[in-house]
Amino acid sequence: MSSFEVPQVRDLPGNGAGPVFLEPWHAEAFSLVVTLHRQGAFGWNEWVELFSDTLRDVPAESGESVESAHYRRWLLTLESIVARKRLASVEEMTQRKEEWRHAYLHTPHGEPMELRRPPAAIELHESQHHSHAAHPAPIAVSPSRHSGTV
Image (cartoon, rainbow, N blue to C red; front, side, top):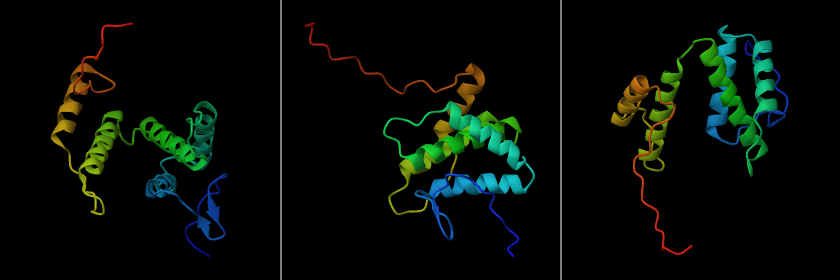
């Protein structure tokens, strides 16, 4: 018998051999939850209750696939429980998301992504710390091109 048993999760895409993930981040989000549970960060019943709340309260987005909606809500629940258990602060999670976004946008296709704290993340982190802004301000705003007619 294997020393690792994945808790049963209803509606998880899979085949007879186990879960099947459509995107790499789906597998990573799933494995993070299982790993945190195995390390004792939270009980499985607590996870199921919070994830059920998210499924109930956060609807699928228009045109979103069942799998994408499932893992988007899985990730929202993961972020929520990490913040609730103080495993990472909201600021730390925001910074890490910015690092991933920066790496994604600046890594050539086919190359491995390398996480680095970009200068913008430092400025974003400091501006959020001082202004308590939930979202960064727009980088640029263009005036509308109004022809003068209504």
